[in-house]
Length: 178
View 1 (tube, rainbow, N blue to C red):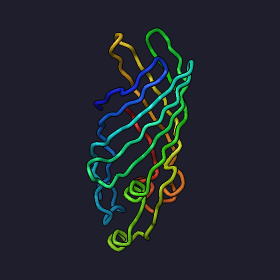
View 2 (tube, rainbow, N blue to C red; view 1 turned 60 degrees about the vertical axis):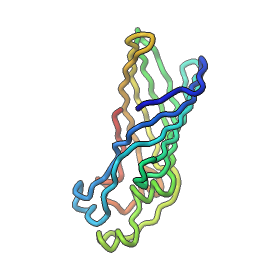
View 3 (cartoon, one colour; view 1 turned 135 degrees about the horizontal axis):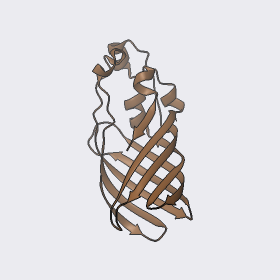
View 4 (cartoon, one colour; view 1 turned 45 degrees about the vertical axis):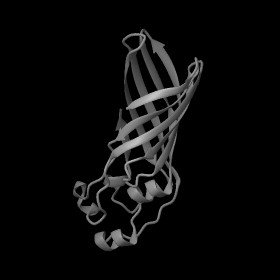
């Protein structure tokens, strides 16, 4: 990810970044996906803001597909509590992700054409909460200007995403490591 803080203060950051989203799906991933078409990963524009009060940070990030892969827009909000320990920072907290209609149709919907090709029933989706999740992040400060982080996010799909007609192994789990 390559980004810049447009506004920065002692307790907040507002900025933009160019990131690459590896989230994809191939028909060959699961025999039940035959006829649904592939979904490619690609670059996304990220707009972000966060604000910290004492050990608590609230953040919001908007991700927009800029490659034309029909991945639409998602907005993630998170709230974490952090504890510093000798150059390390341990953070944990909940969040949720909202997704617009093009995103939910691409990853969880089944169009009439896809239904005819796959044998799955048609399934229309709309914008809404995609998931609720829990974040765990560990950061180490190497110097004043350099740090490294490892993060894990575990979540559960909600609403149209959770009720998708797609095979559970292909659509209904969220676990990411960053």
